[in-house]
Every structure is written in structure tokens, then in C-alpha cells.
Length: 113
Image: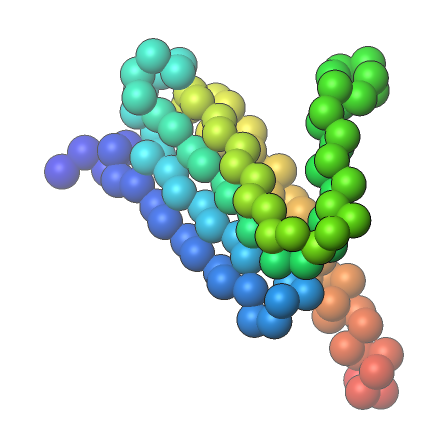
């Protein structure tokens, strides 16, 4: 079995309407750029108020959506290519580490540890 082609699927549904549901689906590395079939989708589902703003590299807003009517929305970010997938995974891992560290620090203060 070629482990480079094993995909991954992680789904975290929203526990309450105010939380975001998140889904991560990836083919894993496929041996090259976008033309080799590697793809990762990161999907966010918001049941209540959410704003979406897409900016170009110069911070010019090219899309702006303000959900003032509390309509559910789904945002999908697709990345193709081995290096692009690795970059997204690295960024998500770093965010996770920072969030977990902050949560651990908050818990220590809250419970006197």
C-alpha cells in the first residue's frame, strides 16, 4: 500500500448553534503539484451570525458577506498540491498548538493550578 495516497477525513460537528462545525478532508500527498491529484478541503459551517471577507495579497477586499439575517453558511477552502497541503497542515497545527496552550493557561488560572 502506498501510504502517500492514504487520505484523511476529520469532522467536528457544532455542539450548539453558536459553534462552528469544521470538516477536513484530504487525499494526502500524491507526488507533486495540483496536477497529480492531491487535494485538501477545509469546510466551516456556521449556523448563526458569521461574516466572510476575502482579501487579495494587498488587503483589498474582493468579497464581503455580512450575515445580518443569521442564515447558515458553509465556507469551503480547497488547496491542491503536496506543498500547498503541507503548508495548510502546518498552519492548522500551529493554530491548534496556540489555542490549546491558551486554553491550558486559562484553565490553570481558573482552577488555581
